[in-house]
Amino acid sequence: MLHKNVFFLFLLALFISGCSSTPYVQSEAERNIPLGKKVDLKNSVAVKDKLHNQHENWRGVKYRMGGLGKNGIDCSGFVYRTFRSELGVHIPRTTELQSSVGKSIGRHQLQAGDLVFFKTRFKVRHVGIYIENNRFLHASTSRGVMISSLDNVYWKDKFWKAQRL
Image (cartoon, rainbow, N blue to C red):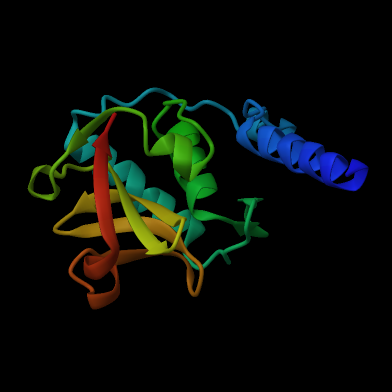
């Protein structure tokens, strides 16, 4: 009987701790990325220029989960870094938190600088930044930093939602 009670208490403690969450704490690497000059996100020409420049500077940088630099960067880190250094806008670091900022918009409403989100696997999300003409900038797990089309068979099928800051 004692073993059953101990086992039950263990399961209860595990369940309770699993439901708790710790607040996100910004890392030193994130704090060290300089905040660039703020760009008016409604000025699509300026935003597109910044995004194309960012692509030129980062093209082909390999994907690395949790990475924030030229030795490897993940999708949400690339979005975080681009908004911070190129657009002068501070956004959250993780895809989960990025998916909750701004306002939700339809795919047909996309403008330069909008965040595009994808469900790539069960509980796995991907994020990129819309540029123009159904193309978005992102850090791909297979090819690193690149521009892809929303009409690509892979991405079209996985599109989840878009957010405007």
